[in-house]
Amino acid sequence: MFGLPVWIWLILLVVILVAIVGLFAVRRRRPPTRAMPPSPPQMPPQEPMGPEGPPPP
Image 1 (cartoon, rainbow, N blue to C red):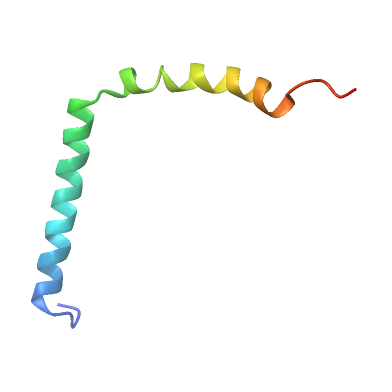
Image 2: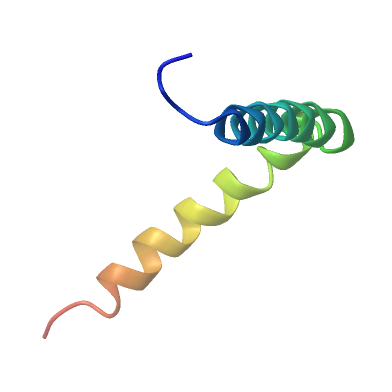
């Protein structure tokens, strides 16, 4: 079409299809509701204790 070989368009179509199918598969297998809650609670407690550390003398 735009001067590119046919095999390039075929590869692009396959990559796009695989990406779309992969996104749907991940969303169906791992719902975002279950993946999101565990991560936020773990971050806040580590931030204040790690960077601050013991108070300066």
